[in-house]
Length: 430
Image 1 (cartoon, rainbow, N blue to C red):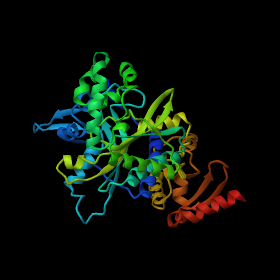
Image 2 (image 1 turned 45 degrees about the vertical axis):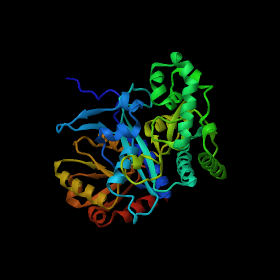
Image 3 (image 1 turned 180 degrees about the vertical axis):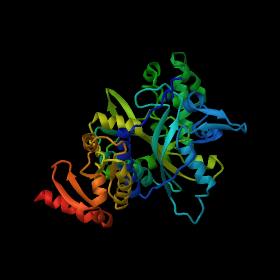
Image 4 (image 1 turned 60 degrees about the vertical axis):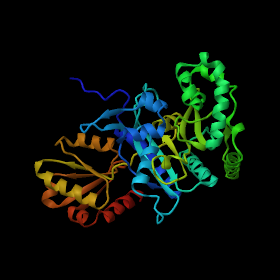
């Protein structure tokens, strides 16, 4: 039987995981600067959580959900997006309690699962950073979180990423726009794609999000939701734009942008980059003030985003971003003979406890082969331990690049390798 990874998944091998760790370190630092704290939620939840949160007519529910019944006949789904689980955790753990400082700022890095056709940057198991800010409604919160994403991209060194902005307004505004959009689209119903014909009555705003060529041509002339915002929604959106301009964050208005999930209201946004001639969304989100209450929590305004890590890596590699190289070894211990095995183990662990990065040979190979391994691992220093070294307690340390050697004792290394380490480099510099 030939075992292979499931279709639409990927192995992240050590050379690649170093890039992930670099991105994760920058994300963690940026989120920490904005006082966001990490949350970790289960990768599977009740099917109802995701189906209700994302909308029964959304593509996630109708086409992409990985769901099953477990041994207790409970309907379970693998997490397709992060916000629903974060909201469930917020309610279940009573993070809305009066004694908890608001807003509640949380972030996560999690695998997501969607059954769709695998393609570049879009897998069936993919990974996202997500941030959620719950408990306060203020245009400054919308802008702070957009600015945080912008800061993250800049600290990574990415270029050519543009911000698209829109407002879906409040419930009153959306109701008025829904009627206008249906009135506009109905004469074109026969020309719409099959999915858009279904959405026309169920959720007409989703027609604006269609990627089918026939739909794109039709919605070009559709009425703009911005023309149907009531005074409250309009003023809120104007304040968001003014604050972005104050921070010198450039944006373009895209009145056809609706995002793929049903829970959004007011500000929505996407960060987009041109990738191989096509627009690629690397980050998107917005305000979702009704979701906590929808799940029987207290009325709670909220704002957040999701950021795809695989897509981000594609863009970073295309732009030849220099990832921090993996750290070299401080010391490689070459081992000669069975009688040296005990001492080599003891020496290796002693150096690691002194905070040096160390590897040793386990294979009883010839010294030449061991030295080649040290070279491949990028070891700075090589200590050879054989029967003579065990008997006398004297060892030589060789600098792998200059080939210069210094003598010391095992006793000195066990007591403290740092002075010996410094002496080696002082000798080399001299």
